[in-house]
Image (cartoon, rainbow, N blue to C red; front, side):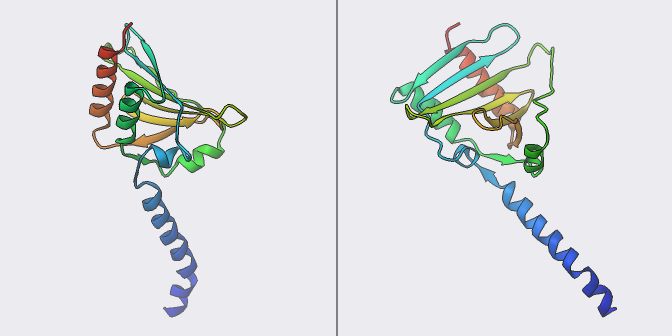
Length: 167
């Protein structure tokens, strides 16, 4: 019996490490963890439903910029443990489509530019009850995010921006 346990001990150790890593990776995180060195110079918000798709851009130092960034920094997401595998697979984009009249979508584009060669664009998106993120200036792959009350938070935020952004 003792020999059988020793035989499977390395396998059990690997499984334990993977479980611990999965718990750590899927812990609640903010945008600073999703986007390292996050300090955008501009925030562009595109809120859309089936009828309209207004866009608003806020520059650093304005009250609108501070409000949008503060709201996004207050969100807590859980990354999917499958995201590291999705990063090495070929890009499939987001394959979702809806013709539902209450379908809402919001994109936050965060642009960071130091005026030289360090330019970065980060994107946070809510679409069809799910959140996604990507570093558009990097590999550009959309990765899934989980959130408590994901649909309620995303729909409320999208509707608020639809109401406040002029068409």
